[in-house]
Image 1 (cartoon, one colour):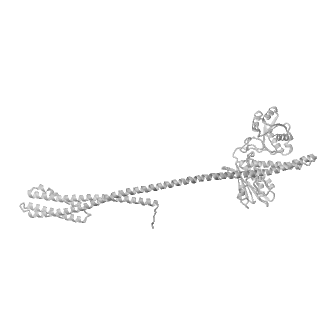
Image 2 (cartoon, one colour):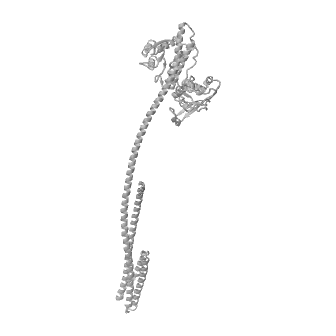
Image 3 (cartoon, helix red, strand yellow):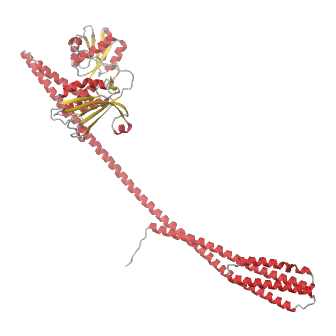
Amino acid sequence: MTITVTLPKRTVSWAVFGFLVAAIVGVALSIEKQVAAQAWVEHTLYVRTALLQTLSSLLNAETGQRGFLLTGNETFLEPFNSAGQTLDERFKKLSQVVSDNDMQMQRLERLRAVATDRLASLQKRLQEKRATPDAALTDSLLNGKRLMDEARGIIAEMIAEEERLLATRNAESRWTVAAAQAGVVGALLLAILLGWAILKERQKQVAELQTANVVLREALTRAAEESEQRARVEGQLRQSQKMQAVGQLTGGLAHDFNNMLAVIVGCLNLLKRKIARGETDEEGLIDKAMECIDHAAALTHRLLAFSRQQPLAPQTVDANKLVAGMAEMIRRTLGECISVETVLGSGLWRAHVDPHQLESALLNLAVNARDAMPDGGKMTVETSNAYIDDHYARQQAEVQEGQYVLLAVTDTGFGMSADVIAKAFDPFFTTKSLGKGTGLGLSQVFGFVKQSGGHIKIYSEPGQGTTVKIYLPRFVGEGEIPAPSRDMSGDAALRGSEETLVLIVEDEDRMRSVAVAMFKDLGYSALAAQNAIEALALIDANPGVSLLFTDVVMPDMSGRALAEEALRRRPDLKVIFTTGFSRNAVIHNGVLDRGVNFLPKPFTIDQLAQKVIAVIRAMEST
């Protein structure tokens, strides 16, 4: 059985790297040994030279002494006289360089003693020569020869020992060089092996990276495809939800309008039959038809409010004053079983909002609070200054950071779950039983608040009651737009004068004829035109025309363009616009243009009378 051990590539690379480091260290040690061996070679050569110089100094001293003995000339003694000091210096240096070798030190001490004895012998013979010039020299010469032979022997031994050491050290040096060369070669081979291993590892990593890139690209492609598929599904879901909302909206509209049309048609049919029979008890039928008409108009206004298309006339409003003025009406609306409390903030800022729409919104919230407390409870209306910071604004849709006037309506009713809160502002969504609500109250409030540049938020939990907070933009301009006077009650106050000539411009024949009849019934003189061309001709032909009542949406020339041309010709002319729906004609960003008089369709004869009287009084006051 064969056992195969597989080491990881990373382990092999580290092993090769370790071998390379070891080889480099070995080469460094080999070079260090080679340098040391070379130093020992130089040491041996120095010792040999010093020994030979020592022997030469002894020979020079002996030669000078013999020259003196033979000739008696003192000049021959100069090498002898300096030999003692020279030999002493040489022995000191030799002691230093051979101090690591005990055998050589022993030999050096013997050599020192022999040299000392030899110098003493030469000195004694000189003294004897000076004392007895004719004395025999045989014994002295024999003794000197013996000492010199001994000195030569010691020096020869020391030189032989140094030669042996030199040979040994030369051999070590050659081995060291060979080892260093082998180490260098090994290091190179290991470096090549390590480079090869690293290269293979990098090639493998590159291949793995390329494979990973391919996998990543495939994953990104799949993610993009999934994201695109999810976007398509979400688009289809949004379209489905949109169509569901449209279906819910149109279904609710069809249901309500069909009910109202059925009542109106039934009342008209009954009226026609009663008139044919000569009966005169038609008031009840007329009232029912008018009630349905009012309901239809209110429904249209609510839809416009939800879609943020209703014409707003914002003014500088004191919310405390408005709430205090409505408190009694709210109490009567809610009934005796529900207590109403108002908590009005001190130092409250002014709000910039349409006061009539704000009153309608508060009344809607009060009715919702009443329906949430069938067994009685408490409703609180609070006002205060508020600031919406950037962090909160970023988390909400269509909300701007800044200062707001806060109106909070709180009840102690059933409360709402999170799912109900999420749908509370949807049109025709209601939790009330069939026939108890249209589902447009909160959607109308929502549309009004958003169109006014504000924010609305519901806080509620089942069984804990509900708080609806309305944030209205703070008024930061100068001055106020005065609210129109409401002192127009009574039939006499709404009657007009035949001296006032009104020009009615309406492209729809039936609406035009009804409008003319209304003005005449109110006591005004009236002219009619079906388009702007006819209207301008009538203005030129009738200088007594003082009021222009025109539809906004007409072919060829809009009511706004007609009014601008009429005012160019007659600067003192007063204009009232009317329309069922208008965008960017007399309304911009949901707000009526400054100074514009507007009466939305459908309108009752009383509403028409109040608007005309308000315009005429404003004209007379100027």
